[in-house]
Image (cartoon, rainbow, N blue to C red):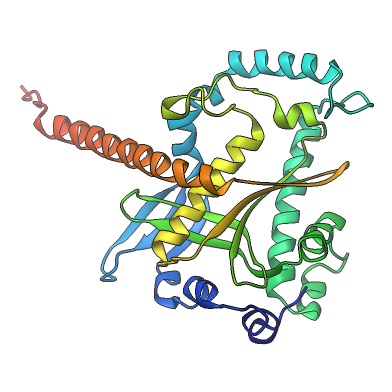
Length: 306
């Protein structure tokens, strides 16, 4: 998995233009730091001011699935998933799903974080450095995912956890994996772990999609992950000036194996302008509200002390 970038990627592909555009804009890469619940920090182009950009997931939720944090909706959705998982269907599993306790859910999140971290390190670190960092060895899933992409798809890794941002949107995100095929076409991949049953992965668990996507997409885990991937790819393509065709994929790894779902090119062509315009309008409205609140605080009269 440890790659010699020049020999195994750039010299392997037929046209490395898109890869070079993404990977060799060092000035843009140096402008973004961070990547946690508080968002990202992005340096202005003139290098004089540090801005805090929101992570992508929260604005997407606010625009398209705002009921995500509603406990009543989540409880109702959980019952619906259990009911759906018991119904026979082409994608239903023979075994009954095991619903996680709170402790198991925490372990699942920790496992997902570990797998993401180790995939990133397997792509970017030498073997000796990785073993020093993880003397217990790599998690099996962190090995399975890159092997699947290389053996089944014939792709090679370009980078992992690529941080991208858009200044007009005031948002940033980290793309889990970027791979390339032999033509030099970039494939942006969102990695998800867990969700043991097909019903949990595909069920419309949080009510219908909102906003301009209402009625167009089901509000299930797969589609939410795909929107996140497409929006991140949109930032990368726009920010790095990539003019070539690209792919967006959601890779789902569980105890039952790996599935890889891709977005149709025609669908992406229609979806990207809708995503960008909706996120931009949401960002501008949010800025206007913040300015209004700030102005009201300044103009508020302070009572005179007697």
